[in-house]
Every structure is written in structure tokens, then in C-alpha cells.
Length: 245
Image 1: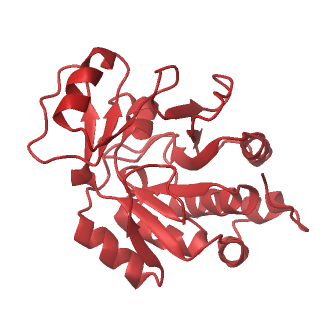
Image 2: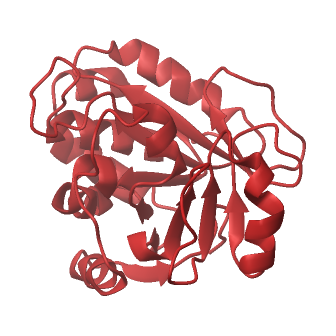
């Protein structure tokens, strides 16, 4: 369910008025907690990836790795397994417009953009997401993460936080900033623009970038917790995307 707005979002985004967007998004926050999943708690299960030395809290099961599910469940019975759509018994990733909803299955929606993506189209996509009944989290990812090569897909911080603010204003689910894509300091700063979930390089980033980019940052439990406290919010280590306040 979306929040009803008494103002027009598009001009604020187009004009780059991020301070006003941040103010409005902060007022629309659903709670004071910010959930986070540090990098060492996550295992990206590629087909030939060796088992991690440390016990993960979350296993992201990549396409092509479905046959590994029984052995992974046996090795890490307490871990939460998160996978792409169509895998029976797994919480799903909903890539916008690619599949119908699965009743009762929590969804994480991934919305990609670049510096030239029309604002009207992005807002229309967010309105579309607002109608998805089982949506629990939305992560907005720039089409390029910068890395060492500047490309037309590379964004700069003003557009990133503006769109995160728009998501907070239009959606009732968690809004996630990816430090894997945005870098740690911008992800931390996005807390002031309404985000209530931070995470690193996981399933959504891997599916979006297909190995074309490297993570912009890797963040430990202690650093994530300290950064959220520094931003004036309550940190909460989470183990699944449908965590409740």
C-alpha cells in the first residue's frame, strides 16, 4: 500500500531539491530502526562457490545453484535461504515486471536507474510496486556503480538519495540502500532520506550487475552498527528481508 501525497514528487526530483525530499521522507518513516546485514553474515551461493568458513545468517541462492539447496540446508540449518523467483519454499526476488506475484511469498523488488532515466517512468514503477501485496523490501540500484570507469550509467549522490526518498514516500515496505552499489558513506547518509535497511553485495546486486562491477564497499557488523547510531537511528542486525519492527 502506498502513502497518499499532497504534493507532486516529480518537480522535487527533477530540480534536485534533495533537502526538501529528505525532510519529507524522514517525516514519512515508519519506525526508528534501521535493519542491516553485514557482508560476513551473507553467503552468495554460486554453483561452484566453496562453503564459507563462518556460518552465514543468510544464503543467497543464485540461479544455477538450485541443486545445492539440500546440502546447504544440511550444513547451515539455521540460515535463511533467499533465492530468485520460482524456487519452491524460498522467499523470492521480484524483478519489476518480470513475473506475477506468488501468494504469501515475500518479495524484494529491484528497481534500476541511471542519470538519464525519466523521472515519470521511475515514479510509475514505484506506484506499480506499491500495489504488490507481498512486497517486503525495495532496493534501488544505479545501472552502474562507478567502479574505476566513468560511464553514462554512472550516477552521483543527488539522484540516488532523491529516488530513495521517493521510494520511502510511496511505499509501505522497507527501503534498502546498498553500500555494495553506493558505497558506505552514501548508504549511511541515505538514512536521513528515509531508508530503513542497509546491506552489501547480495543476490539483488549480483543479478543486476552480472559480474560487471565490483562491490563499492564491504562493511562489518561493528561498522554498520556504529554508522547507524551515528546517523541517529536504532541499528538492528537482521537475518531476512521480511523482518518486522
